[in-house]
Image 1: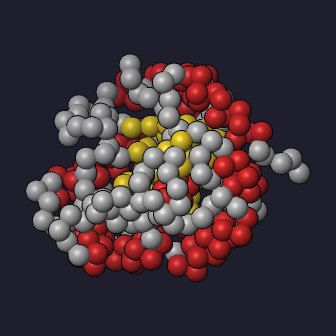
Image 2 (image 1 turned 90 degrees about the horizontal axis):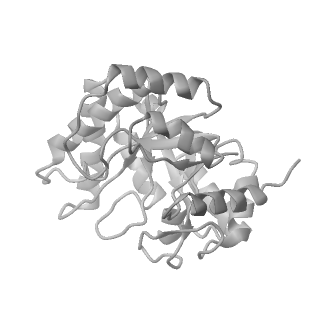
Length: 281
């Protein structure tokens, strides 16, 4: 398994590779703009060229772009529905420009809508974004913890969303370990992991799984509270992660950590812990 972190773009894209190498990353994820706002500037061609060159001269692969937090296409009633679709289309374009093969999206909140209405809204929103931007970037749905009115916490909901999208070939899944655990899928022991993977495969299909977000959970199984924690220090624990990173159905996947950080020290600690769990063949 290739490990990495979500890397800050503060100071420009030129800092991403440097920060990734400092943390011992083999794969990388980042935002293309402010994750907590709608406004953004077009990408600077010179900066993009320099970034792509730095990625190509590094060993970082694959490269993942993550959507900002504000877009929500899970409710037709949201006043930001159309703006959210445009935001996805924009980041599909930016992903291609930056050389990222994948774009990760949070599925969203249904608000006052029913579950079925929310699933339809997500599928239709993705269809519209895909119609506007026809490129080879794969859109990854990230499963949620089910906090508040979030949808996408069950594999069945994700399956229905993908089935509702016309261009299936452009769809994949990012499985967040903390969100899965918080939604009720027990990843803390072998039997729970085997059961979860079997359910995923029977519902969505493991061929759709393109990325793991490796995060421990600060809250208990089925809490429906989204709280990431340091690897091995939460409710999933070291044995859960040991089984996950060595599983024959998962070890070919990239694993991105989004663990809490104040500075580089915490990232280095989490990288050391996750690598210590890998069993050499």
